[in-house]
Length: 125
Image 1: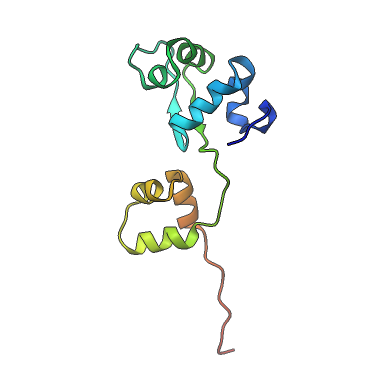
Image 2: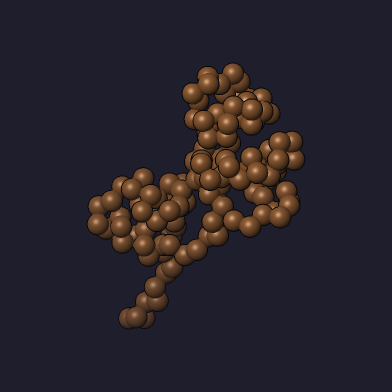
């Protein structure tokens, strides 16, 4: 993801980039993209956020977002995956497995799978 300024980041990460730095926001995307996470007020030293970002940056982010649930976008451009999602569902794959196979979030799989298909014309009218 080529990010040259804070305004190019998803809105949910702009405060992090403003206060702590773009590199920390991008690390969040790299480690937690496509998931919603809760930032603890006082994380243990082995908390996944501290492990991923390092103690200093991890604690700074947790202090900034203490107690908040934040969706961390995966940062990839949206593309049409409807056919892939529907085919994998027909094969009996769970939405979590589909998300991992396609490299998209489980939330996006749910949205795509629940879209109303386009109406087909009535051929007999």
